[in-house]
Length: 159
Image 1 (spheres, one colour):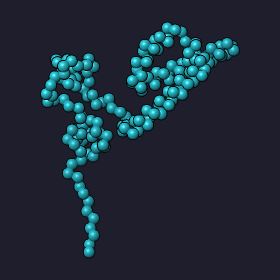
Image 2 (image 1 turned 90 degrees about the horizontal axis):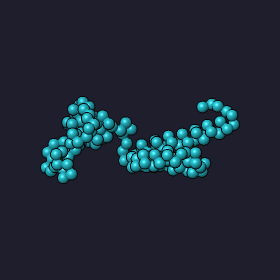
Image 3 (image 1 turned 45 degrees about the horizontal axis):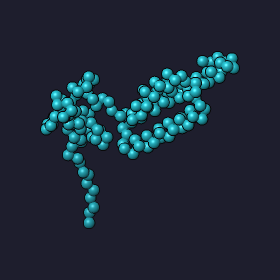
Image 4 (image 1 turned 30 degrees about the vertical axis):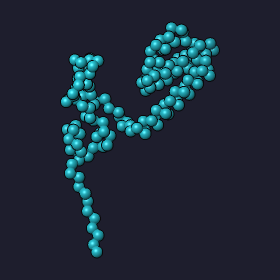
């Protein structure tokens, strides 16, 4: 009896819409799942809230781009990796809040700035990447100002 191995050759490397964007080469699963999958034609119904536009109409926004897929995730997160990263960021954010509360860093900030933070940053909480960046930046400033004030009281000037 002869056992023979045969190789399976794919009929195509990737889908046509991916081939137009990246060329005729094997695409990653991330590319196949994220690029050019947004419907742009053949909509049956206009949205009730803005009937002058189609669904997903690029004319709805004042921002005009040649290719909206330029805004891609450089890390190519899949759901599992994304949720793990978000959990780590949330832990960091909570530890930053604990640091601010423990050292009472908000006492050095004027009421005006606290009101601005409340009005500007808290609505960004749903956009957690932006929110975390700004909160960490604010905590850095708080710690920096506290250190600066302490050093000035002691007569040191490094900043």
